[in-house]
Image 1 (tube, rainbow, N blue to C red):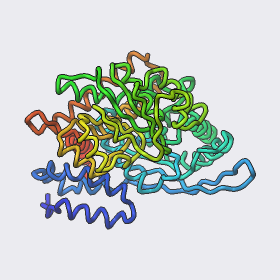
Image 2 (tube, rainbow, N blue to C red; image 1 turned 120 degrees about the vertical axis):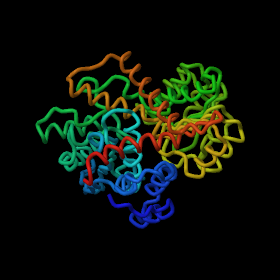
Image 3 (cartoon, rainbow, N blue to C red; image 1 turned 135 degrees about the horizontal axis):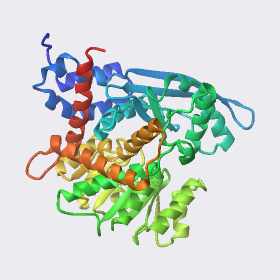
Image 4 (tube, rainbow, N blue to C red; image 1 turned 60 degrees about the vertical axis):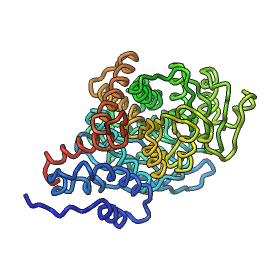
Amino acid sequence: MAVTDHVDLNGFMEGVKKRNPHQPEFVQAVQEVAEDIFEFMQDKEEYHSQQILRRIAEPDRVVSFRVCWEDDAGNIRVQRGWRVQNNNAIGPYKGGIRFHPSVTESVLKFLAFEQTFKNALTGLPMGGGKGGSNFNPKGKSVREIMRFCQSFMTELYRHIGADIDVPAGDIGVGGREIGFMFGQYKRITNNFTGVLTGKGLEWGGSLIRTEATGYGAVYFLENMLATKGENLAGKTAVISGSGNVATHAAEKIVQLGGKVLTLSDSGGFIHDPDGITQDKIDWVKTHKTHRRGRIEEYVAEFPRASFHAGKTPWGVPCDMALPCATQNELLGEDAKTLVANGCRAVSEGANMPTDLDGVHIFKAAKILYAPGKASNAGGVAVSGLEMSQNSERRSWKEEELQQMLKDIMSGIHNSCIRYGDQGGGYIDYVKGANIAGFKKVADAMLAFGVV
């Protein structure tokens, strides 16, 4: 086997930037992984000679397509749709579909790249993918959303399948949207098969899928605290977001004896010094899901809370922080503030919510910091379990699934320790997650040869 000249990290990243111009989110995601992987690969010639990291950082394919639909006024509307199939070395492509105005090819490529490692960490046979559209479901009628979802699936169906690519929900895509897309897939193909996850319980869905990402992030946080002989009881937490992940993370923290101080949305955040109890969480769930309301209305219902327009919650003193909204919502200055205010643990519920400056600050401060690819893998883990249930034509009980989720999050935590233990009681969870995920995918790619 020929020995190649080893490019250094800077040289590798220059190549990534050159090949992916105007795609800052994707470049950021690759940089964050490459910083750890290059050190790990230093003495492993086969990874260099087979260009493994370069190949993982080049999606297998990016499918881009036009989505035409008709609004309620009879106007023809045109959106763009994508499916990024990043890597299927260890299983069918797996990753959500996102409907949001911020969706671009760069965002979806970063998400599919991250998903590749996240899925590998679960221990389940799933590759990495992501899809979506710049369609904004906010303000649209149910029939407009249905027509869009049907048009989107009319193109997407030819690129997916139970053993090819299994999409799920994400921002802007919940059970309703999955239902519309699955109905159209079934209509076109005449197949009732497990081609989507996040389905309704009546037609192939899995128990605890809704709760899994938020619960999993808290289970991971619990595992991190246990390395210090601590637990969640009596600790304060700030959480961003007020959707599915954020509310279920809050719910699990409350169940385990913690106190949640904040929730947020794109308009700002609410701070409730009395703590956001289960009754209050239930109100938020109903308010956001059924009334499509805004988080600022929380203060009218619970007047001891305050609303902070246009701000994020990272200035509120806390023991723990859980960013559960979107990418790059927690910046370097926010990370400095959290550390200065005594925050001791961060568990990411969203994908890449902390920018590179923030990541470096958390690592330098040696706090307990879990990257999203490890801590928010609970959602895709239960999606993988839904795939298994669909294949077997069966449903597992909630207790079984809860235990499987706990076991999977514990297994991810152990993998992070294996590759991230820096000695002296410090575990670099970012490094551990990156190396553990990379190694599984890379070794599978080596086994297949140059394909």
